[in-house]
Length: 301
Image (cartoon, rainbow, N blue to C red):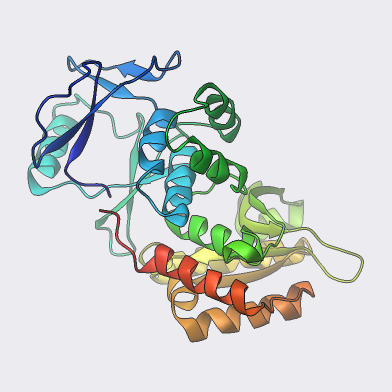
């Protein structure tokens, strides 16, 4: 989650004094239509695309790609402070906010609220690519265009985004260069529905089948959400339904991809299941090391 200072745009040639709470940037040219949005609180905010442009100049490529996945995805990560938690509870109690309107907070296996929220995408990849054409000449637009061009699809969690980056980026950028579909909808047969009690399900990362192997669903299982007996039973029923549909399911955890030994094992498993070569030249290995540092170790300042 990004913290202070807040970045403020100003049309004045000489921006106002910058403090620890905010930094002011002067605009040297007119923003594209829709770049600034009105709110009901007597201030304006930048659009999702323009917000990403502001981040592009100061984030590492992998971090910018993560931010792009978040704004184009169906999730956000935000941990309210104690005061904000209190205000949210009061607003819900007074019915000023609806728990089903807009953002929905995800609860962990213990029932406690997490910093993960579900919502509709704020921006589509197509809209972002179109906006970058209107932002030609702005500082950071090339980085933003790079991020938009390397998104593999719509993700539902930060974990899914990290895995998509590690698997989808070209080897020269530190990834594995694999082709897959994010959140692939799979219609369940009658027998599969009898196992899972639903008409369809979604595969986090879906690899199409070939003449020599079955389709593969790579499932990103976060311990805080998938832990507990009820969640385990639900995952087991879902896995059984997919296997009945001829889809092989491979569950992976965040700890597995974060730890070097676990990541090496995951790559070996992908070699065996997908029939791909995950080997890399020395320069590609260095790029992978840098990528993993940006994804797991580097903080967003």
